[in-house]
Image (cartoon, rainbow, N blue to C red):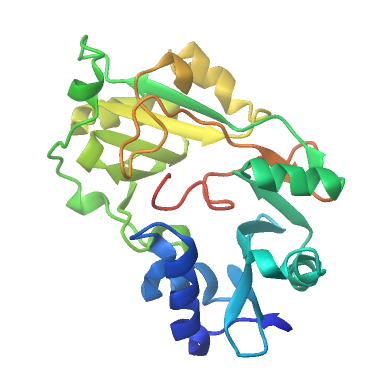
Length: 277
């Protein structure tokens, strides 16, 4: 078996692999999305294992943000497990940056525990509902709305060039993803919270959310302004497709200690891409 970095020339094999292991319409089955995620080594890289027939049987993705290689899209065919393949793929990612991860599933958590990784506080997601609407009914708040934001659209960073998302910059400089198909604004960067809220409600969004790590002191301002942890709201975390009563449960781990001031941004790892955001 061979382990190496993938390139766009591997696309046919990658598409077959992602179609085989992921649900229908997973974003990685789209060539443009793969190029966005892994096509530029400044932002990410795809590491693959091929068997003797040249078929991809294993994959580890690295999302490069904040001086860290965020490990994502990890999968190894069952017959290849226990042979040191995953370690070789992780070594390829480790050549770029120290390793970290979010959104690990149960199997991933077991793997990282065995690897003696450090587990931090889970990420936190805050939600605020437009105060003009007293009805906090799920069906009323998570519905398609019409908003006029053409003059706010941005694609000036790699994150906002992500296929199928609509990034906007508000007047105060705050940045967010417009998800008007489910009524909300998913905040990425907060500059002035009061002005952000004022414009958000004026545009016509029914709710807004913000996800970050537990040590982000901006959460104090959010709480003062009436934002609540998402499990206290009716707005679910997963909205593409909508999964009612599914709230944020995102673990944050790293292979080596990170600075105590390190804050996990929405653009890090894969918890901020289409499908979750």
